[in-house]
Amino acid sequence: MKISLIQPGRNNLKYLKWSYDSIRKNQGEHEVEICVADDASTDGTWDWCLEMMDKDPLFKAYCNEGPDRLGHTILYDTLINDVATSDIAMIYHADMYLCPNALTSIEKHIKPGTIVSLTRIEPPLHPQGPEKILWNGGVEPEEFLEDELLVEVPKFIDKEKITGGIFAPWAFYIKDFQDIGGHDPLYAPQSKEDSDIFNRFQLNDIKFIQTWEGFVYHMTCRGSRRNTLDKAKNIYEDSPEWLAQNQRSTRNFIRKWGHFVMHDPTLVPIVPPKYNVGIIIANCNTQLLELLEPWCDVIYIDEGNTPTLIKDYIEKEQINTVIDLNRRILPYDNEKNCEMLVNLDSKSFNQEDFTNIQRFSQIIQNSGEIGSFELGNLKINIIQMNEYQNELIFCPKI
Image (cartoon, rainbow, N blue to C red):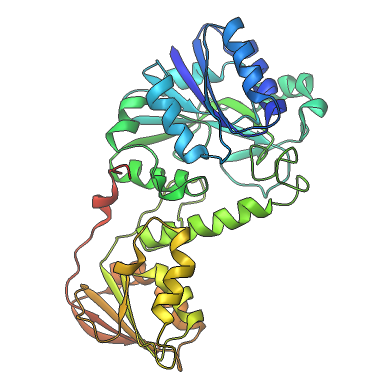
């Protein structure tokens, strides 16, 4: 098998070197092209990339000279579309050690229309889950228990077990990736771009396979979220930069899909219907506008005693999204063109009402019908029940 491994990185040279060694050591008979993107690093990553391109003909690299980062949402696609030369690629993090025979297990299952994820072996930094194996082999390359891991890996193999989740590292045909437009730059520089594209693959009838014959050891979150060589204080705390960006990306995910990220216990995406929803708020205030704006297509607000409420909010929030908020936030008396309308008053709105708004698409999917009804303090009018999630499959580039 010929495969291109896709690795953007910023200030994680130590992990890139560790990962590179494991790939070359354990790739077997497969032809592995390693594609690295240096995202404005200051730790010597690009110098190392230049050195490796001289030494290794199957090492390819791209440099974002900065000073601002592009993020892996953008650089994944740059490497896949402009650098990789294989038909098959794999999103592969720098803090992953490739175990022996992992690529053979991918070759066994990979075909057009199918994405294959390797099973992750991880130290106990995060809770146990049915999609991974907890085994503590260290959280830094210098303390990595390689010999012990290689003894344990054969014990983890289950040739009869196949599950259907998707997560990194995930291998795919580049055509399948390009057919839906790749990652959505809405989430740049990072966070939720993976959940978004997984939803779109699911809607486009791509099959997901998690093999339990192939593994990586994953130190977890060392690429940026908890990279102590970059922005993180320690391996147990998310960096302030990541937390802020994750909040922005979560709000953008909700704006696009109308719900939080959803999946089953084995990380198979769950995609509820996307309806065309308008929220109408009497006696609105800044806090309620900030809370509810992402949860609909259009929000109609009574500015009350704050005549600049819409203007002030857009000036503050527009920097956090490429979605035009001027088209989403309209005055209370504006013509209502949404297919479902949710009326509420800030004076009676409570936590139960907010929970119902968060679950609105599932509630309508399970029991909604055309007409008017009340749900707690929410007055709901369903005019049409068209679903629009399939219109989100293809991502046109901004």
